Image 1 (cartoon, helix red, strand yellow):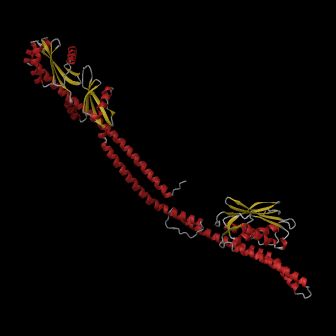
Image 2 (cartoon, rainbow, N blue to C red):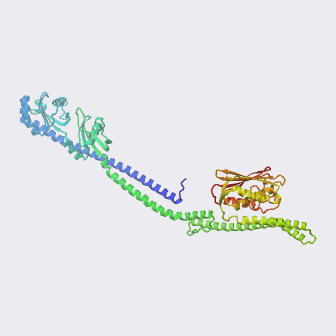
Length: 579
């Protein structure tokens, strides 16, 4: 699991908070700007439509007045009185040129077309006849004609002698002005927008980019282009705000003007603003992180030193330098910890001194107790040797007893020396454990008091390990002496067996003695622990445990009870380190 320092947590927290705040501000600003852009675009669309309406009204009034003046010309009236279609068709070309229109139509008093002129791709004559028939029914002098993919705004005026209402009609004049690319461009400039003219569900002309015309045509054919409320549409990869207005009055099909404002163009500055906000936010986060780093360092450095002091104390270092300057809570905590550390060190020294004195006392008591009996025997036999009447056999017996007492004292002293030098460097060699076991068994069986005990070695030559032969022999001797003293002299049996395991070698020393008493079974390897022994310092098993730990192994009581005790020694497969 990843562990973070307090300063890192503090720094990451502030960076996260700064990032969230910056992101929130960016989103709010973006949303508000989008609303403002939409409102501006909507207002611009409304303004464009109002401007177009005014311009269109003025244009229609001008063109209608021109058509009225043209219909009132006497030559045109005289031409219409001929009632000859061929004559009227030929002679009307002059009046068409005078009108300046792209479509020029003359019809007789019955509404039948007698002259037809078109400056562009021929407008269907049948479509013109249908429009004139519509006029004969409605009498509307303004109309929109659509045919052959062309859209015309047409103005109609009756031709008559005197007042047309008096019933002296000669015919009908219709002049049309095409809504072409030039007209669309003019309207686009006036409206400051992209525009499109549609007749019913058919898009006739548009100033939008050629990439988007097909999409706009599809939009118009679906009827969405005739929505009169500003709304957003997607044409290709660009978004537009769209509004439409109907510019026809009583035409059979609605003629609409669609005004489009590009969202992408209008919001180009928003992307620039976003980049600036992101840059400023990043700079703010970076500056804030630097500031937090400095502040957190100021606050957490004393805590870091205090944590280092605690870790040093855990390793036993009471002199790790700590800074107690300042009057804040961290300085107070550091001072309290420093006092506690000094008190703990003083208490530990007192405990060590007390324990040392207690250990010396126990050792002195044990040594004096264990050496008193041999010394008493030596003194007594020495006094016996002073007597002159002793026979040679008696004198030899007394000398033998003195020698046994001296050997016992030497054995006790060797155990003490072995305990005091337990941390000497090991002389590690790879060898056979069975050879060391055989030497230890022979040493024990050489003593007269143990010669009747059956001691068997069952360690094969395959039991190889890295060990110090001298110290391991000392370990085996201590365990064998303890076992020999525990078993019965008459039927005592001790078996030393070996077993190769995956992680090394196990040696087991098993006896058929009465087992280890419950009173000492949990403290068996502590110094000066002894129970029911005639001699010994209580350091033998302590030496055993320490030597095995130096080898990287261990010594444990595998089982104990009335049927006997088994000690197990573990030697690792590779040279071990003291634990």
